Image (tube, rainbow over all chains, first blue to last red; front, side):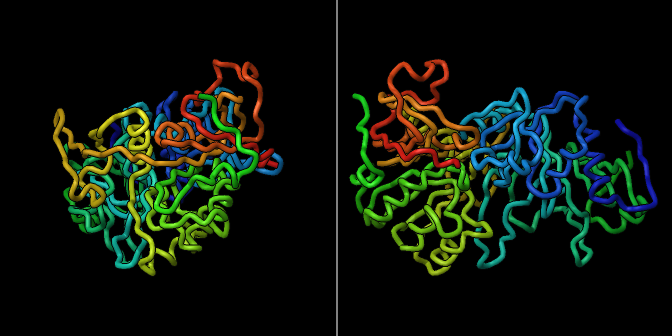
Length: 218
Length: 224
């Protein structure tokens, strides 16, 4: 277990991404969700030997393609042209999701609207009247990887905590999130217990006052 | 039996009739059999149920089928995109039924149909609104949802190359739904860049064996 740390300033998006990258075990198979998680790939080192999975059917995904590298048949889950690294492989959709659902991926990093203290995840649908629902691979990713981590802002624009006691948004997966990275704090979730690994630009006591879940200090 | 080799995309899709269920390969534009979809639009079949990961993009392919109201139902995982305006309009007008399926469940339901599986329990979607009304079961302490196969009368698929026996190879992430849809449809119609003689494809590299393929048509290199 890591011990509690704190910094005076909130984390920038790049700092968050770098911390996530450092936490990914060497040699891991990893899926990075669309949005903030995609930025993690910029901070992975070649020494880590991490293999990136994209659920539309590839392992060994390289950086975003530029110029002559752009190939309409080689895209990521966000439909952005990417490149392949030596040792890459392609496979069909059922294999790609068997990889995920079957527990072969080590880490999946996702964005979120809300996470509950018990690790329930909401990230696919606002549930707003008239909103057209689209789920893609979100539910498969949430419950498939050995570890599901979330990157999100800790507070809504109105200042409400997105780490909640019970989800108010529609569920993506139950009890699936084991870690949350935010600009203000990093949390480990296990056995309905929320442990604060670090705080950034906010004190532990202030965090306890603002969040609706019981917090423990690492 | 070796597949029929159609002279044109129009000939390849000529059997598709009103009310048919049609699987269409592709993830976004990668692997989307654009010329077969255009031919399906031209052939006039309507009241179609379409199975695809998405629900059309911009003003091409599946989006045009939806625009022309040829599609009465879409089974997909991700209909809403920044350029899915034809889907959005038809859906909001109540002129298009949507069955939303998590992407991995969509893939496995298609695979199950092709493999003769009557249903399967999956953890994906358990406890969510997409599992409402479905049978669930606890297995070794984990919640699972019963999902059923998705069969289709036709599949429209894009591959890179075929031999005259219907053996297929694909290209990069354009493979996506092609191999499983080929197994799940009664008639699989494939557009390829080129058709080669038996023996020209390395048997070790064949991704879809020809047994699953009914119709081939050469469209030419659509990647450049």
